[in-house]
Image (cartoon, rainbow, N blue to C red; front, side, top):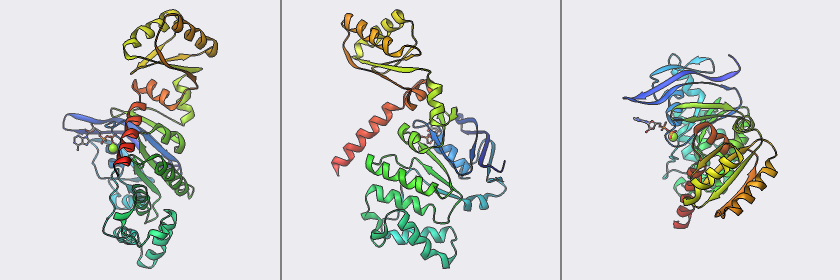
Length: 330
Ligand SMILES: Nc1ncnc2c1ncn2[C@@H]1O[C@H](COP(=O)(O)OP(=O)(O)O)[C@@H](O)[C@H]1O
Ligand SMILES: [Mg+2]
């Protein structure tokens, strides 16, 4: 259909006996920011690499801007800008020369190259650093250079594989605003992420992927509504108490719960506040060691937990800790 930038039908990829992508189908509309959200090993990069023509699918069909990626491989390649998961800028080259290199690789007409380079530096807020070697840039600056570099040929579609993984929170937010501003020019953006906040803040629609399967596709609000009607109650207790408290809540209040690490998560459809208060009173009476107790509207994390049976939050907070550790080391 002409409204779709990308159409994917029953796409599969096996590596030997292992099925990394198990028959996924979805369409990406022209001009939207489409997020593929899933944990490490879910099959995100494998899917992107098939759209890019880097990997050959085991079976299935991919169309990009109504072109078959097998038949019209070169045309498709020219249409897509791609930023890999690992930022690879040429450290010895200046920002300007990094951009010039890519402009030549992507056959930007010679007469337009200088103009494109200056435009790109402006977009990346790197005008003052254009003549500095990219190796001297901060992580966030390198990532921004890498972003505009992947768009040097003015592609219709931009594919970003985990554009903010490993960035500190401030650089992540700045990256989001750069992606949004590029997007306002009408480009279609496909990005993968492990961050719920990122999918929530940036993406028009999100595909939740786990173990090579699409669990759901929708806007962030649609996914949240799928997670629960009503409110979510979250009770954190000592590890040794999780089972007992979970049993108590289930048996005394007859509500469904899920256990995620030291958290007990319950969906309360009606009278959420008074039910929560009664649960709190019961736990107090039972002498349970409650570390945290909260009631909130369903979040994307709740949706993810419901759809996949596991939480993304732990991976994210671990990653943030790693980031902070890395920052202190510098
Ligand atoms: N070339 C390969 N050979 C074998 N297994 C692979 C290969 N590439 C990826 N995989 C496996 O496929 C699964 C999905 O990988 P990937 O698409 O990179 O996940 P993600 O990008 O979501 O972290 C993982 O279990 C990974 O180990
Ligand atoms: Mg990946």
